[in-house]
Amino acid sequence: MKPKTNRKIDKLRMLAIMILCVLVSLTGILFAVTIFRKGDISGGIVGLLITIFIVGLAIFTFRRNNKALKEGYPIHDERSRKVIEKASSKAFYVSLYLLLAIGFFSEDLIKFRDVSQATGVAVGGMALLFLAFWAYYNRKEI
Image (cartoon, helix red, strand yellow):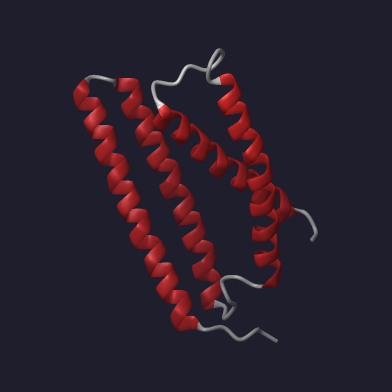
């Protein structure tokens, strides 16, 4: 028996995610073009690679969620919510140590231009930690 799902809300969520993905992609492309115009080829390529990665992740998520909606299942069930909760809590705890390490090593070992660069590294690290923990707990029996 398939669980009850509110298809209208799930479809609106999917639409909002796709709009957000398009906006992030356009911003990434704008960033890469700006960096290319300044003459920094490697920075522009990194910006394009990050944008391609985000678009790939969004397409994967959209296809998976769209398939679940077509089959009549909700986007998030009890297990997926538990996986997200566990992954986010572990990522939060590990990211605290990441922030401490960035603060400790930023004086001698890691040289940041300014605070915003260190913040960007920290936020990117947090996102990668969540992705790694989510992938681990999604494959593990919970």
